[in-house]
Image 1 (cartoon, helix red, strand yellow):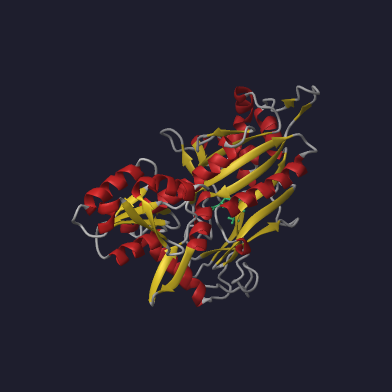
Image 2: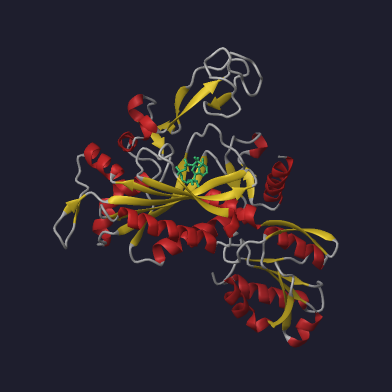
Length: 445
Ligand code: ATP
């Protein structure tokens, strides 16, 4: 296990040092499992979300976008089953006050019984019997903190899509089958958060709900399962570290008929970062029943009425960012020196290129600035004129910048620059005028 801890520790420390991810409220000691994205992290996550949005919404005729509110009518959560069912059984240790999931494998014996042993302080008989604990964050709407004013921070973005489904259907003039996509924050008061941004209490989801005719649901489920894996592979993730995990009958959520996780082999084991679920007509039926509003679809071709089945693709933006970072992280030796490099797919790299004047004289800074100003109108690029060129390359390797552009003495004579490729370390001379095209070709997804 020390190796595992090391890789994650080194990644967490790089993430902080280079401005990918910081602990929230760090100067106050941090807030448990809540993280902030720094200058490079925000670009990386944004690129992932935009790529998802483009492939789901812009490149398809049959999916519409939505941005529903985080706060929803509390009846939504009653109808969806989250109020009753979104719970984990927990046990407390009366001795050391630690709290665990009842199924924590470190617990010896049955919680609540005298033989059960606390995995932290080792006391026997101090663990309480399991109690159910709801994972939804509660708050109050309006000035009075009373039961009638309770609202919840949504634990998934999907419900916003279900309750708006009729509005979207009618306003967009889509016909079934069609989908609604949404990217947004979700909140879960997780009991066992951890592993950096893997399981946090505030996170972002990229969810798409695809509404289909009953009977065609398994077909669409298979379609979306394949599409989603293709998308993930397109992020440049090593395929040997990806696999599907089909939910067993015990694992299936209360609403699901079939479900696959897309898993990645993290340093701490194989874990899900996206789920594809056949949610049947569970949610829409429950909302129809609870709201009293008809959520049936009238098929214009057959005049049949039915409540659509839903195939959901549900990905975490933060977990996907973690997959991308873990997969990209490499330590290697170059010319006898250690280099840490993040081999991001160029299309999602936070910075696309860095511009370096070899020295700060002889017209090089002026030409470098002109090139930089030209490139920044199209891409997120970085200008660095501090320190040796080797040090500047290393800094960009750690940031995962795919191209380093060096302006040297020859550049001011013949208008060519050197482009260094992050992964191959190959250096080629390119006409400065052709840089835009050179980059565009290589940044194409
Ligand atoms: P897990 O059991 O790992 O917490 P889940 O099965 O509850 O996940 P879903 O409800 O299917 O997850 O959510 C879909 C996706 O949302 C997950 O694959 C993950 O990427 C993301 N996600 C869920 N919970 C969290 C969390 N606490 N922190 C970060 N991402 C999360």
